[in-house]
Each structure stands twice: as structure tokens, then as C-alpha cells.
Amino acid sequence: MRINCEILDLRCFLMVVELGSFHRAADTLNLSQPALSRRIQKLESVIGGALLERSTRHVASTAMGMELLPLVRRMLEEFDASLFTTREAGVQRSYIINMACIPTAAFYFLPLVIGRFSQEYPLVRFSILDLPATQGVQSVARGEVEFGINFMGNSDPDLEFIRLIEDPFVLAARKDHDLAGKSVVSWSELSPYPLITVHRSSANRTLLDASLAKSNLRLPWSYEVTHLSTSLGLVEAGLGISVLPRLAMPQTDHPFLVPIPIRNPEVSRTIGILKRRGVSLSPAAERFLRMLITTWTEG
Image (cartoon, rainbow, N blue to C red; front, top):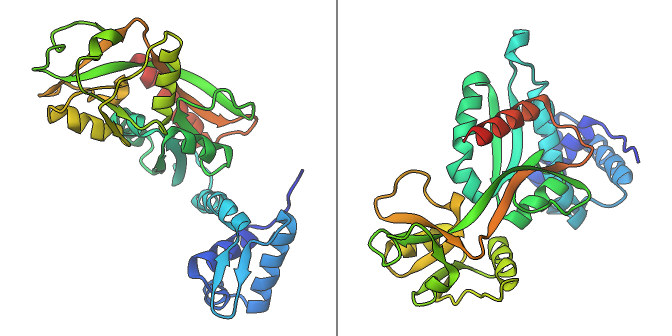
């Protein structure tokens, strides 16, 4: 289905939401209030539902408006930034790359690639949503971002998943722990020690529990946390050991912590690029993804 609306219609909607007033939005856009109202009504007609709830004192987004808002904001940012052109063509214009990324990759790996890319294309800006896996998939599917870096979404028929690497789960222990001198450990060796794990609502935990269940294994945890960084903090404090993805570990030598491979079975998650199937990325995003794939492969 082809939906026809004008940029000004979208800008009117966004301005009303951000200012919370038809009057202030009309003044900002240099429109009369009736003209602004007609723009909103036209957009609502095209979308097929009310986007704003109006009262004499307040204007708020409907549920449909809240769902549309991130996509409208991104579209206008990209429109205002104009077209991305390469340095080879002699002109570089400002452009925004919008992405969603699982926090572990955003913290340890993404800065390296962004640094390299920014040296070549200094006018390109980045908007990064560091989201848990499930929310990251939803953000890509709704079009709030151009692409995501995730370990979920490869089973969604509407999304394309490009594999990057396997990220194995490892044991995180203090360097003075009983197990720290081992080159590899088995799951059964973890049971005598207090175990720190992420909450069962986490996608990482779901993947880990499902993989271990196939071998009739379970995690006898003592501490359950929401964030992987909290898990590492508890390990560093000497409260126990933790099982977490290798990417969640510090990528350089740590003064207190050491990662130890776990076998029998080896459990890993597949990290990849997630984007909507059949939807072309902007030239800037395409170029960034090529650098991302190359850098990750070389690493």
C-alpha cells in the first residue's frame, strides 16, 4: 500500500507533540491554527486513525501516535540532514545513522568501528539505542532505526539477519578464585560455588537455560541481577562467579577478572546485523555496515 503525505504534515504532527499545543506549534511553523489542524487531519486520514487527543488545555499522543512518533522523528532527522554523499565525490554532508545495539556490543566493540568511520566521514552523526535484545528487534521492526546489532531476530520472516560472529558464554572469575588457573571448565565444576546470573527475563538467560536444558543441566544460581555489568561487579567483589557472553567481559587484560571457556556443552549466541527485509539502507548506513563487517571479521 502506498501512503502519500507531505513532509510538512509530519513536521506539524511532531511539533504539536513536542510543544503540547496547537497554538504554539502553529506559531513555530508560521502557520495559522486552521491550516495546522488541516495538516494533522490529513495525516490522520492517511494513517487511518487519530494521532492526537485534544482538549482545551492539553494535547497528547494517542497509542497510534506514540507508535508513529519515533519513525516520524527519524524520517525528519534524515530529511533535514539531506543526502549523504561520499568524500570521493568531493562533498560530504551531515547525515545521521540510526541504529539499535545490544549493550555488550555497544560498550566494547562499537566505539572502535565508529572511531574508524568518523575519521573518514567526520560529518556523519550517530544515534545509538543501546537496548536489550527483544527491544532492539522491535525497534528495527518498527522502523525506528535503520538496523540493529543483535543476537535475536533471525527467525522473523520480515527481518534479515546477517551473521557476524559467534559469542560464546564464558565463566567470569576473580584471578584468585579456585577455578582461575584452569584453561577450560565444565558446567558441573561450577556447582560448588555461588553463581551470579542475569534475571530469567533476559534474552541471554533464556538462550542459556534452553541450551543447557538440552543436556539436562541447569544453573544453580545464588544471585540474580538485571544487568551483566552488575554481575561483573559482584564477581569483582568476590561474591561468586558468573556465566556471561564473552563480549560482556572486558576486552583487555583486567586487573582482577579472567574469562574461562566452558565446555560440555559449549553455549554461544550468534551476533549479527538485523534489518528490515526488502528495505534499502541509506548510503551512509550501507558504508558503515561494510566497515563494521570488515572490522569484526579482522578482529
